[in-house]
Length: 115
Length: 111
Image (cartoon, rainbow over all chains, first blue to last red; front, top):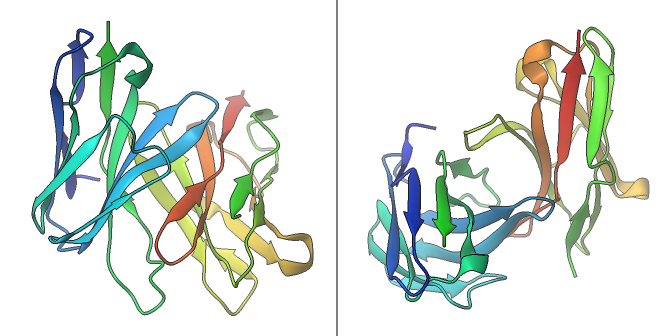
């Protein structure tokens, strides 16, 4: 979905390095999410944000932090990367509907390898 | 606790054959259910969603899904599979604040 852009698309780095993954969206959505995808485990939620001043931990937030710089930007940081954080990372956005369960729209992912 | 189960890790079908991918959910309230497809190297694309009303929902690319409350299921179907349908498919349940995804079913289509 070109409306949700993730940078970089691929990154190889070393253990202990600080890494930032960036996400920007042009959909005008208030809600943004970070997931990681591992083979056989599906997608697991790391953090989510419902507006600029709102940050919430997801299922697997340990070792990660996020920043919501603007409505359109949501970045994910690994302060000190470790090999088991090697995964495919997705950013997603959704509108806030009455039900709160509007579909999520995904970026194309960032493939992160930590050596 | 809410959860989504996709019991089939991998399915292989012949082109032109029918397809059914299974999804079971566990959630105490009225579920909001989704199916997504992921092609290699890409993000997840929404196929269809169920919020309320008619329990048979139509989606893009000729897919449909049926919500069965008594069985806590939301199975995805397609009458005739095309080679381009080869991908990974994810079922998800929305709970207001979060989405919970199944572990996915990988579909292979053979000529």
